[in-house]
Length: 184
Image (cartoon, rainbow, N blue to C red):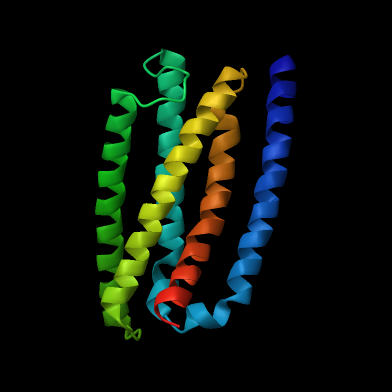
């Protein structure tokens, strides 16, 4: 019963934070519907892009937590070979996944007749968005994992739901910001 209480106490706050972030995400998307609709290819790949950044971040949290519990990563905020290996491995994974996502998105766009406006600029916006998100998420998750672990908390219980919601909010936010900067 104590374990149940611990999980409940850790989960209720995270669920509330994730729900509020979900409201912000929905508000952001609905208030920028016209901008996103003017670039249908972005609407086509946005759900997959959200999933990609969230999934990579979830893998990172799981790896960091495993390293901390196994002792292969010191619970100190400093670089290590293990951290660098995870960073480069996940960076290569996210770049290859992004290339596949963009390729499939454009193939589906061409086959279905979706209007493709300025493809190189759209690809650049998606690449910059994912790279910035990956860098920010990596630092946030690394520091968050260390701090939670030091305080005796399981980073998986806190960071995975929060990072998924944060990714769902930040991905369209960055895309909208870059559309405003580079296109509009």
